[in-house]
Image 1 (cartoon, one colour):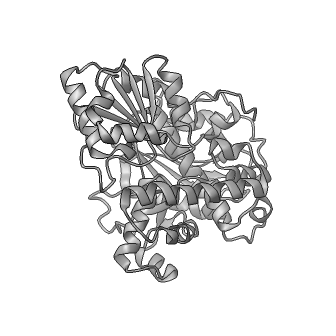
Image 2 (spheres, one colour):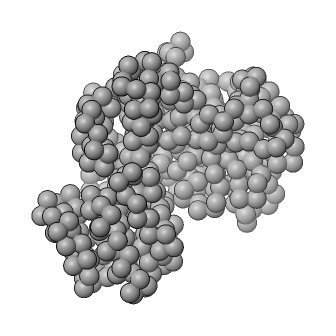
Length: 427
C-alpha cells in the first residue's frame, strides 16, 4: 500500500451526520487507527490542537476555559482524554453558551464514557463515533458496501434470507485459505498494513507496550502496568471464547481476582479487546450471561500468540478457528458501525453448550446469525446449530449464515446458507 494513499473511511458519512447534529462529537478508537487523519479530512477549517504535544497539553491543563474559548470553530482536540475533566467541563461551558452543531470534534484513544477518572459525559451535547482499524473493504479498496449492508438494506426486496438467495448466483470466491491466513495476520492497523512478517509483529507488540505505558497508566494511575502485556496475551489466547475472569487470573497469577478484572477492563477501555454480550429472550430462559471476548484486531492477536500464515495453514493448528472467528467478528462489527442502523452484535450460548458465534439484532428485533469455520467445506454441525436456533426463536430469526473458507455460496436449509468469508467485503 502506497504510504501517500488516502484511504476512504466507510464511517466518514456517519461522522459528518454527527457533526451536523451534535454540538460536540467524540471520534474514539485505538491509537494508530487513523482518527487524526480522518478528523483532518472532515474538518477543513478551524483549528487542530493535539494534546500529545507537551506544550499544548500544559496549556489545556493550566487554563482549560481559556484554551477552548475564543478560538475559530470547529475546534479539533486530539487525544482529549489527556486534558481530564476540567477540559471537558470547559468545552461544556463553551457549547452551552453557543450551541451550534459541529463546534468541537474530540478524538480519543480511550472510551471517554468508561474511563474512571473522567466523570463529565457531556450528556445531551455529545455524539460518539467509534473508528476501528481498517475494514477489509477499506484495506483493499473494494467498492462493495459489505455483506451486512446488503443483507439489511431496507430498500431491498425481502428480508435477509431473500437477499441470501440472490447471492447463490454469484461466482465462487477467489480467496484461498492461505490468503485468509495472511489477512488475519495483517489485521487492520494502517501502519501494520505496510509491514510484513516479523516487522509487523514487532510493530504491533510495540504498539501494545506504548498504549500500556502511556494511556492506561495515565488514566488509571495503576503502577503495575508492566503486567498488562501478559494479560493481553492471555486474552488473545482466549479470543472468541467466553470471558471467565477467574481463568485469566489463574493463568496470569496477577494480583487479586479483582485487580485482574480491572486490568481486563482497562484493555477494553483502550479498544484492544471487545466483549460481546449474550443475546437472550424470554423464549430462551436458560441462557448463560457471560460475555464473549474478542481481540479487537486479529493481527494484534496473531502477533501476541506468534501465529503466522504458515502456522494457520496447518489444519491441526488450534488457533485457526478462534482467529478466523475473531477476524469475522471484527469485520461485522466494523460494517455495523458504518451503517448507523441501530443494530447490535451479540453471541448466544445455552447451558447445554449450544452456541451461535455471532447474532446481529436488528433495530426491529429480528436476528441475522452467523457461524464461522476455517474449513473449506460448510460444517454440517454448525448448520444444524443454526437450524435449532431458527426453530427456537421462531419469527425473530431472519437468516442464518455459515461463513467458511470454501469457494461456493450454498443453500443449507430453510433460511440457512453457507457463504465464503470473502463475501463479507465482496458482494
